[in-house]
Image (cartoon, rainbow, N blue to C red; front, side):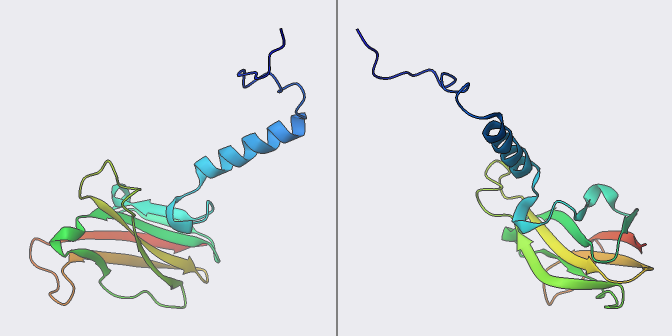
Length: 150
């Protein structure tokens, strides 16, 4: 009696070219290494763990500040002062993590603030976790990082 359906997923593996299999593996690996929100893999991502530290980027490279918060409280991360456009240009994107991305993190949401490095130099980025139009309070959470563009 002939079998009409083969449920073995590897039965046809020998028929597939090694190139097809390799291409599939590269595609899956690349997808797993991508960062959220269209942030390129070459971007330098700075997190709360680097608060008070320093980071180096190259001209033309994207710098992303990734900080967690709770949007239901009305608080967001805001720059204390916009950086000089000579060194860093904001790319206009303040992206928040989607519901699907934070499904297991309760009300915690990640805010991404993106910049593109321009020319060689040094500056400090400072952010406060505030309610917009209210401003910082004595107990305001703060974040700062020294940026070296080289």
